Amino acid sequence: MHWICSTCGTQQEDTPQPPRRCPICDDSRQYVGWEGQHWTTLDGLRTRHRNAIREEEPGVWSIVTEPTFGIGQRAFLVRTSEGNILWDCISLLDDGTVRAVRDLGGIDVMAISHPHYYSSMIEWSEAFGGVPIWIHEAEREWVRRRSDAVRFWTGDTHGLPGGATLIRGGGTSTDTRRCTTQASFSPATSRRWPWTAAGRVSYTATRTWCRWEPRR
Image 1 (cartoon, rainbow, N blue to C red):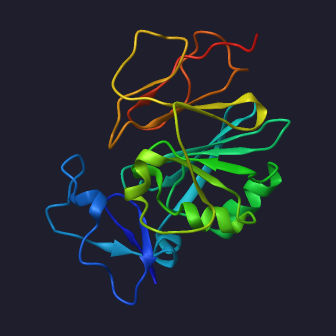
Image 2 (image 1 turned 45 degrees about the vertical axis):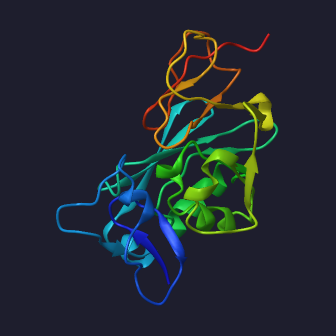
């Protein structure tokens, strides 16, 4: 059984019984609830929650679970002429969500900003043909479920389809042309869409904010 932490929403490796602890929640930058460690499963989530998919701007769709689960994560599906990108991930995946995302062109690649968004990323990848999941090498130790779909990138930037760029951040920066990230664990990952209007604050992950520059 791939148990899911009810506090942070991270799915774990296959075990017959729930793990004793969630390493992400045990970290001092996260928390364990007052009632202690609790677990659920995908089937359990499907009985109590649903995903809402909304167009935030042309070509950008948000995916969020209702009622709120975990820390209220949301993912973004970005449609490009070179393939669709799922930026960050959420715990719940059901048949309705898969159909809706397929109607929007499916997913060609996934990219995760930091460990709070690992959630059920392997389930999402497998549902769309085992698409690659890009995570920065610095976050390797936090990956709770292993898969060949997980790809670790290094350095400060990594290109994605459609001219998007993953940018390794940490703390703050005065260079507003590029994304800056207040890292949640080790320096986290931002992403830049070059087709978004200059100066516009993007839709971002928790603790991540970006200011975009147009393609030149």
